[in-house]
Image 1 (tube, rainbow, N blue to C red):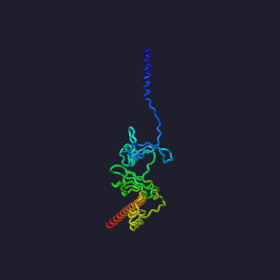
Image 2 (image 1 turned 180 degrees about the vertical axis):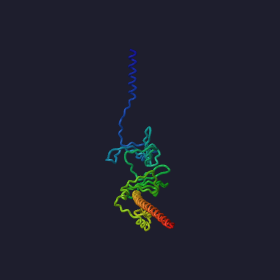
Image 3 (image 1 turned 135 degrees about the vertical axis):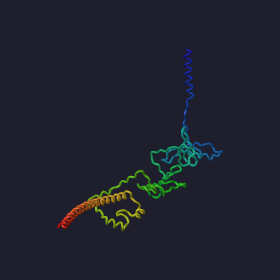
Image 4 (image 1 turned 90 degrees about the horizontal axis):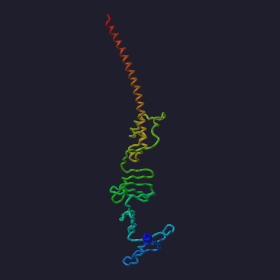
Length: 281
């Protein structure tokens, strides 16, 4: 009986403790919650309040927090802070810009802005000019925050303009047609005399821009490579033709040498005959 009584008392005690630990939550309805008065100045109350208010999106009810000294939302591992100048910091309480993030930024959508500036002492500026062109400039940054566009790169409607040196391990240019038309039977291969005349008059190869034109207009690498290939193929045809001529001339020279040997042999025989006649009594 004693054991039963002790067990009952212990059970009632547990239920009693649990009942004491029960927390009751109640709703608090409010329109405006104001912070304490600043030095007794009630005029500051509207600047330190939490309110429910109509938002601009369709007139829905939203939450309005106005705390002139700044607003801080802190979790166990991070902080979201907006200072009194309107700068917002994520994981930093000293934001130096409108948005200052201590950590990585990830987005599933686009980032819209006028300029993007990289950090560090060797900073670069990504700039979209407001001049109606669909251009993007990437240039090293000056100390005053402007870009050195004369040394930068411009991306313009699918084209790239590099205002400096271009270094690459490999450059591939795809353009057609090639210069294989030189090897067609109906190709009008200019004579060497015509080329010589053109060089004397123009001071450059036919179908190749002059140095002045290249300096003024630049050089289209794809087209220029094809033109150079065309000239190389023309030179190849000249070399083949000259090789044929050399072989023909070599054959003729050998024939002449053979004929000369035969003539010399005949002359020697004639001379021997004449000498034999002279020696007879």
